[in-house]
Length: 179
Image 1: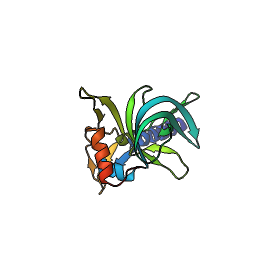
Image 2: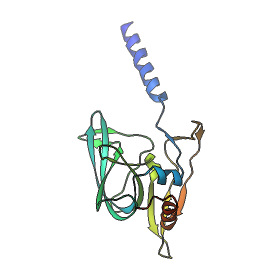
Image 3: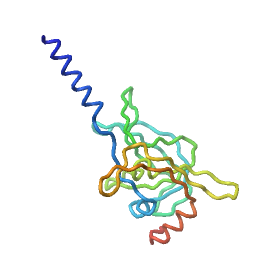
Image 4: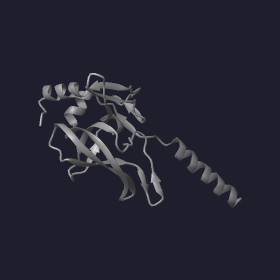
């Protein structure tokens, strides 16, 4: 009888874990990300390293800044993303991006009061950056991998986004947020 109770309890806990809500983020437009970002930079990702802060594992990525259009950035930034691995322990969070060493990105950064740099809106604020045949930086990101809601909290489908670096610069100037 006791074994049946333990098995039922374990199955109940497992069901709750499976049904628990995933990460939910509010969809941000490019203009909202510009307004809410502390920094907007273009550059190249370097190595990432898992770190534990309290009970949460993060990955700290080194990011080499090549150009800044909002804020004042050092030549390198440490970008902190929830999730990662430390000494055999791992945590993953829906909607968190992974940066590939050597890849060019544009990053919309929010800096906390303690000076920690985060990608705004999780994966929403990270764009792959490639140069097209005209020599212009083209920025692309896929749809968010977390549940996305509008400002009223209604679940909506996120969409892939593509724009140019020159368009971001123009919008930053229009918002009066030039460094």
